[in-house]
Length: 169
Image (cartoon, rainbow, N blue to C red; front, top):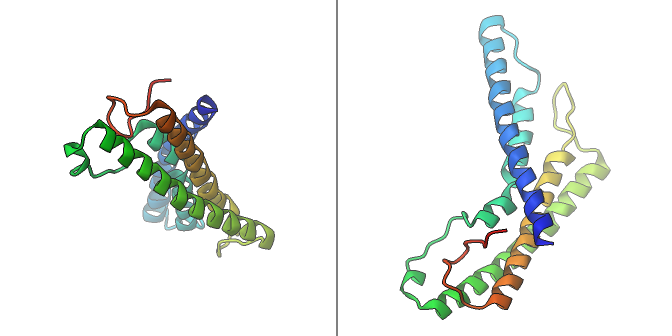
């Protein structure tokens, strides 16, 4: 299960990188079109807003896998191995709780946007559910990764590795 989640999170990270490159090129073309020809790409700002949401949320599990979420370790640096392990488990439990809430809420939001046929206002009438659904997918995958990390932390016990640094595949 962990390998599948890691593979999906890697794929989402690469997709987000490709999306960032596309967004940079898209904005460049739109700005040049507006500046040189007086015509921009229709709904360029709306498209960028929707793609930005997708680009930000999809790689959440990848960042967790790499152990690169922001963390403050002023107190845990002074703790022994057992204290660090307990803090890691508490952090994972709190993360699971909050990401569970966000995942459920984002599922309802994406489902409502899909059922209602919600669109962004503009000439292209872009559907809202893909960007809203990406919040659910990204948060849901992070939730699964957090749960897998919690199981691994409980089963492995305190180790010499730093908190939130994943083991090699």
